[in-house]
Length: 264
Ligand code: SF4
Image (cartoon, rainbow, N blue to C red; front, side, top):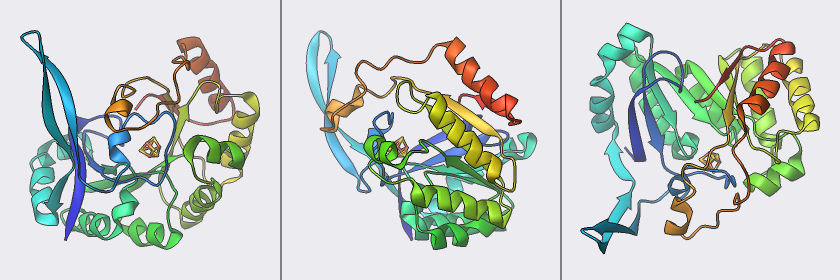
């Protein structure tokens, strides 16, 4: 079995507990306006022409995004970092894109990691078939679960998909008693208004378990990639949130009893 991976990050410290290796799997069913990995969206391996300045001359170079790995090949890379996992309580995180788009490969990788006693996290949009989430749940130690907008119309506007399945899937994981960390991308002018935040707090408070929340402030890193992949960057004019604004929102979550971190 083979999977398509577009990046592997060693020694990651924001993608779950301890020191981790984060595997970025290709393909995403969403199209968030603020996405800083637009190269992740297509499920396929893609090539593009990159312009580079060398000795004052513009030179065109062909580059490829995505590489196929078998389960064995990827496990060999993961296992090179096991000493760091053991020392720090870390492990491997499958991210994307949306890792569940490559369900068979993901399931196989998770099962293999668990057989070798490696801690596993899955960073998911939640926009997936609930049966697939159920199937990977026994082999996933922690879900990093994105919550982008509570209003369905706005969710569709900014991401291209409805939030209904996402919210239902989060409720399902909650019912199952799985470990979850909520990831909230703070996007100024889109999902940081009081009304959305209060709805989010209300929804999270109605779950059976109280999950830690990670606030991910919007940043422009990756905006330059859009042109390269023939995509429109719709965030021109949106500023990165200042520290004060992030702190105000952090306080809102904390006052509602949530453990909050910023960044990731
Ligand atoms: S879910 Fe993540 S990877 Fe997919 S489009 Fe949105 S920001 Fe990008």
